[in-house]
Each structure stands twice: as C-alpha cells, then as structure tokens.
Image (cartoon, rainbow, N blue to C red; front, side, top):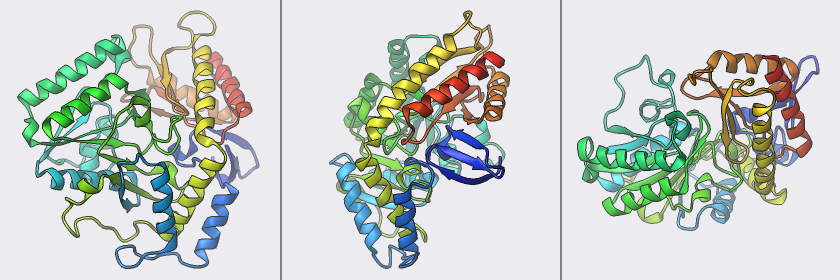
Length: 406
C-alpha cells in the first residue's frame, strides 16, 4: 500500500481505505500515528531550532528529555549518550563495554537482533539475512543459547538450565570470563521470534556478570518505553542491567536512540570516543519529550499490559479454534503488545509459506502485520500503545478470518 495519511492505530491509503496497523512502524509509533501532542511539539520546535549539535551546544529539548528520562529509567542508570538509530546505540554500548573493562570479547544470545551495521550485525543471530554478503565480520563475538523452549521441545525450566550450562561451557572452551566484557541480550527476542526470557535465566546472567566483572547490557530497542506492559522489558524479570540501549518507541517516529549506563561505567569511556553529528537532534528530542508525557498522561504502559493480555489470549484462542492443528500455529507467545504466532507444519518444522500467506490475506482484509523468526514463520502483532480494546477485538476478528481462509 501507499500511505496517504495515518492517525492512531490506523493507516489510510491513497484511495482512503483504512488499514489497522499492527506493525506500528516496527514498534516505533508508540503513541500512535501523528499523535496531536507529538505533532505540535515537533512543529513548534522546527520553528525555533532544528539542529543544535550537542557536543557543541546544549538545547532545551535535550535538557528536558534528560530530565524526563531520569523519571522513568531505573535509578542506577544515571548517565546518557544519544544517537540516531538502534544500531548506533548498540555500537555505542559495544564501544563502552570494551573501553570500560579493557576486555575484547562479548557474548550474545542465539536469536538476538541488534542491528545491521558491521558490529551490530555480527552480534545478530536471528537470521543470516542480516549478516550475509559482506564478510568478514567483526571478531570477538561469541554466541550462547537463549532459552527458546518451543524450539528445543523442552519446558522453560529445562531450556533455561541448558542455556546457563552452555554459557558456562562457553567460558571454559571459547572465551575466558577474564576476556569477556559484556553479555548483550534482549529481554524478549524481537526479530528472533517474539520469545520472552525469564527470571531464572536473567538471574543467572546477572550472577555470572557479578562474579566475573562482566557488564550486562539489555537491548531495549524494541521492548522499551511501555511496549511490554512495563516501562522496560527487563523490569518483568527483576534484573538490574549495567547498560540499556533504547530507540524505536522513544520519539513516536522521529529518529532518536541512545544508551543509559551508570555514571561509574560511563566515566570509563575514553574522552571523544562517542559522538555523532545528528545525535539528540532538537526536533527528535522535542518529540521524545512529548511522547514520554503522553505515555504518562494517558496511562499507555498500563494500556499495553491490559491490551497485551487481551491480544495474547485472543491470538491463542484463534490458534486453537476448530480441529486440532487446523490453524497451522504451533505456539503463541509474547509479552505486552508483542505477540507472535509461530506457523509449523504437521511434523513440527517451520512453515514460512503459510505465515507469508497469512500476511497477504490479512492485508487484503485491512490488517497489517509482519513476520519474524529465523525462518520468517512467526507472524507478529505490534499495535501502537494507544490501541483500544475495540481495535484489538477488530484485529483478532480479522485474524480469525485469515486462519479460517488459509
């Protein structure tokens, strides 16, 4: 479709046809499309200052954003660096952990997505499409299992115990803890298939990080700013990261990203090592301040939790309607407004053909979604945080029609 305009949870094409947007710009338009308060803040800022490079000058939107982030970030994360994209934030975190620890290696987790620049794509294992064709990639990145219970065919407890055992084996065979700077992990695998972590797994990472002087980096780029029904995804799991990366939902569609760390860790960065011409752009910062105020004033974190439960329960009901296995969906999972339905064949193998067909039929009916997962066989639903109960019901009704047709 070619979009003519958008508002809230809906997109409209050039013919005026309405589409329910369960992509949210890949989780970006947290306050919905063109929220009037975000639009007004951006318009006002454009008229006074568009670009004020923040290693040269300060500007009011940056200072206001910093103050606003202090209200919502975990209290121990009290130092910030701003960039433009998620990939840049991940690269900034990588630079920081290596400088802060004077160690060369990082450990990432199977199925994680961290970006498409060289370092970020080296750390990405959610699909070879993100790293193929421009080797050699960066050295010093090692991969440990994530507790993906459905793929292994185990309980969550079994998958978690396996993942932590293999992490210890990695320490014994591939990268010594004394040469490991950081764990970099998503609270919920995004491109990897919408797979939430769990409290025991993250507690295991935190314990090993503390024991060996390793930094724990939570990639909150897709899970941050209310998406999971908590302000940050890691808050579901009672874990305290040393650094988080953020982007996507912070500015309702304007490019802005960053990292938050403890002042003690950030102070170990080499002077002048971090920077960027467009980081903390004044218009993006103004939009971000408005976004955070809307999230607070409209109770959007709570709405994400409530609507997320409604969406997950409804997607599970749709997957099990009719005769056993008729939907072709083997697993439905998620956290907050991140819900994935995994299509599998009768023998349990991934079924990307049916997932793609589901997207096509859904779009024809006016429901926009995306796929993810290593085999692109997981259909993901990511409505904006402003989505209403009625819009969730509408989307689930269309989804049930799709499953019946395919």
